Image (cartoon, rainbow, N blue to C red):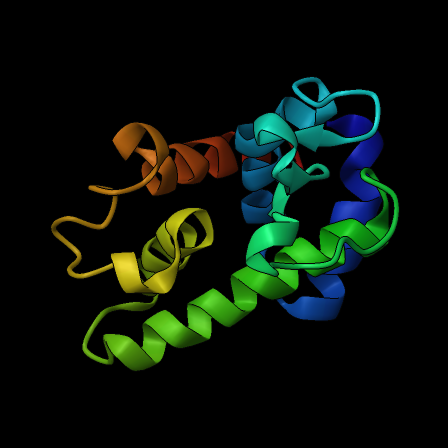
Length: 146
């Protein structure tokens, strides 16, 4: 993760998304790249890069930006997260900022339509713990100076 820190911090500055959150996603999604094939793909070829942006061509998802470990890719993943944050904020206006972040993280993993309540925010995420796990990782990365 240390090698990615300058890129993460740059993207954080340009998007306003906290660097520890971005680092937490990278850690969870790709183990800082260690869980990817040599071309930067994971999830049986359906996702790309450190932040595992979904690229399933048959479903017309995202077109990958940049190299799998580039700042451009981290920016793309972070912009998707920012979009999810805005969707969740509009969908649940009574939630706190922390709840919006947790909902956005769950939506990043499984889509905003699958976030139906805060009590069940992770009920449909990978491992049923995605947002909680990313937030725990983010706390660690914050202590590490991200």
